[in-house]
Image 1 (tube, rainbow, N blue to C red):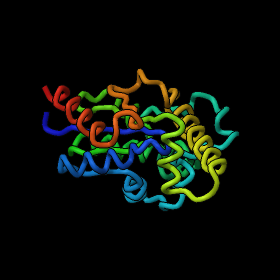
Image 2 (spheres, one colour):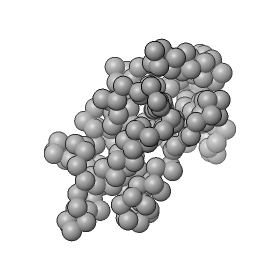
Image 3 (spheres, rainbow, N blue to C red):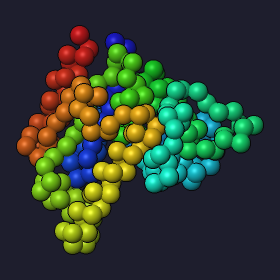
Image 4 (spheres, rainbow, N blue to C red):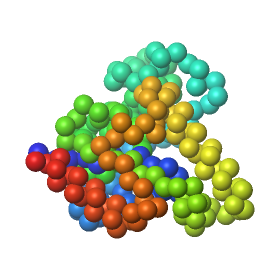
Length: 206
């Protein structure tokens, strides 16, 4: 294949972002996380700050929207009143993700990239997780506050990712059948996770 993409979905504190960064560096390919928001803003002409509304952030009301809002690939035209709707903000991020998959090798973190690219044969879809104690230890390296505060944040973040995927893709974010490779970083460790992804990538390339 001319190029390949590795998508990484992850629980907060699982180390998925760090694994993605180390993997991209080792393979000598691009790494995309929040860069996609900037790129979607440039593509659409919509101010970057507005994308915060669709950046894995779904309100209680939005959880109950009809399935008509689930991503189908169409962009809403500028003359429409819904041009800056959450759906269209997601649509533009999805467009950027598809363009990346078609033009270069890279690692993409989050944003339902595994489902947006579900029909692409050059994509390895990875989910990184860890047991609760491991995640708390890792999260405490970045977050301040008590253990209870950190646990509350992690629970909220898990729910946020779950709602985001259900809202825009109609799937369960933690459904392991939506991924090619699921890695317990708490057991394997960072180095081994990177090695496992590299091994799976070699199989994909054959």
